[in-house]
Image 1 (cartoon, rainbow, N blue to C red):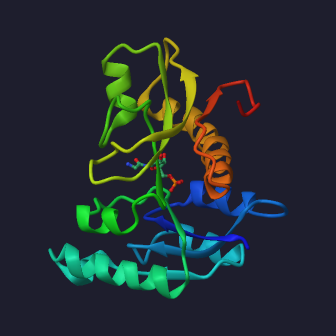
Image 2 (cartoon, rainbow, N blue to C red; image 1 turned 90 degrees about the horizontal axis):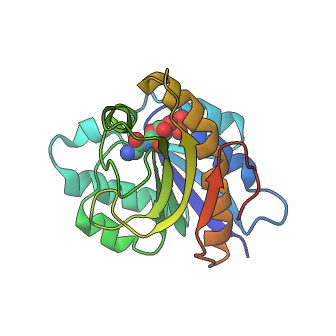
Length: 204
Ligand code: GAR
């Protein structure tokens, strides 16, 4: 039986596309639903074009009531029989109640070498710190923001002329390689971390 994957997005969904495209053939999982908290997210159309069902749970309709928003999110995921949730550019902070419900079954990709730079503006913060390298991490989601066990990291070098924008552009293809590689292992109950470096495509 293939594991049923739900992917949560808020925007363009390029990581979602990479995940969906990876789940074919002997992959142990299949995408069953893409959910956005933003009805305007362009990733929704990309998911439909790939033949994946979509849903919108618009956080604005729930005002400040995170519990009601998350209850609806949870309902939509369960109704689709989702077993593993992948956060892919999902820009809402989830409460400990929700993360507890999905503990051990929810992943996130974050654009930094965690535990460095949790939260926002990761590229700019790596530059400001004078770091020689940058990267992205896939981790299990726990109640601590960007704090769960790390399942994989991909690294890029920071060059003299880099800007936050150039780092984002170079990092994104690494995200697209890392997240599917981690999900493939995770869906097979293999938690061995995946490590990638720019220019080296093999999965370790
Ligand atoms: C990605 O760079 C992802 O790492 C980041 O948002 C982008 C989404 O792009 N996620 C976060 O910052 C989460 N804190 P995408 O919609 O094209 O996948």
